[in-house]
Every structure is written in structure tokens, then in C-alpha cells.
Image (cartoon, rainbow, N blue to C red; front, side, top):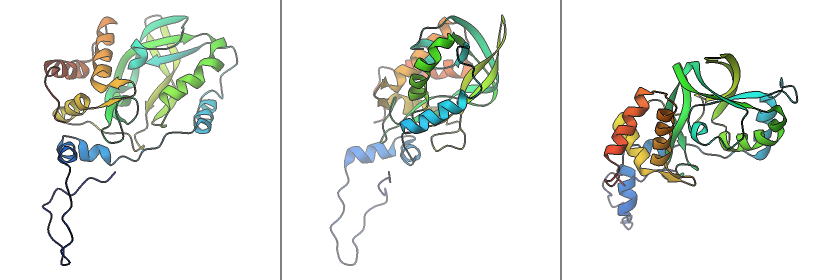
Length: 242
């Protein structure tokens, strides 16, 4: 979506009528992150695309075999499936970050929100769930509908370290080549976007705060996220920029 030109309007030689500027639209365009966010190409994956991606991820899976799934964001506090076992786990080579534009679940095409992805570098403390192999054919299509609605992630089977030993789990890492990927934002801009956005699952700020609370309750300390959560909490009862 193209943003309106903010320069003063001038008459053309033919004296065409001056464009009418919507004050609300102008305010939204001036908000931090607005121009950057509304330039994102956006397309939902088809059911066929999701199915092909899921089949590719499961090509080495033996029917009936239990699988591990690594959660680092909302999967920690809303897994939406019954699991046999849950463990704290550390994934090396990736870190948790608000690096994915959300234009459906926690935002809109006009005002996208931000959700968590696993970006390259560092490590991430999260949880792994062991799913009964008999549940894979039933649950995985729902998991792909939830996590791969736009194909923004790359499903990978990676080593996850736990106190009971290393397991190989399904991990959704960020596709840095995709249009929805956003590198590290200035803190002020990130907080403004989170406070402003809301989608079909509710306000973006609720998503971020629930994740921070779930990590705290699990004994996981994420310094970057906790700082963002403190800034959001401090501004919770003030109006966002737009």
C-alpha cells in the first residue's frame, strides 16, 4: 500500500483540485514504523502450499514415531495440543526476536504488528513438547495453519539441549529472505508498533506481555524481551501514537 505524499500540495498548471487529506490517515502515516510496515508485500499461503511444506518437513518421519516441537513464543502459553512430555530446552544458533510483521493475527495490512521469530545468532531458551506419534496426522495440519499461514518461517529439525539430554525437535526459524522479515528495530519504534497494532487474535501488546509472563513463569530470562515488557507496562495506560 502506497503512503500519501507528505509534501505540501501544489496546483498543477491546469489548476486541478487539491487532494483532500484525511487527518487520521496522515497521523497514522507519521507514526513510527508506518511507512516501513505498509510497504510489505503480503499474501496468505494456500492450503496446497501449506500441505506441500508440511509433507516436505515430514518426509523422514516414520508413521507412529513421537516428535518433539520447540516453542519460544505463544507455543509456550498456548500450545493448543495435548503433549506427552514438556521440557525446558536451549536452541543454539538462533535468538528470540520481534522480527516478523503480523498482518492478520496481531495486526492488519494497514497497521501491522510484530510477532516473535527465531533470528540468526546467539541462543534461545524455550520449551520442547513431545507429541504422541499417533497425533501427528491430526495435529500437524493445524500447526501449519497456525505457524505457516504466510510461509514466513522455515521448518527445521534442530538439536535442542535439555537437562535430560538432547532431542531433535521441529523448529520454525525466520526466513530472512522473506518480505515479512524485519531486522532489529530501534526500541522506541518497536514499542510504538506493538502498542498500536491489533489483529484477529487481539492486541499485539497482549501477545508480547503474555509471552514475557509465560517465560517468567517457566523460569526463562530473556533480557531483551523483559526490557521491552517493562517499557510496554510503563505506557500501558497512555494512548498510543495513533
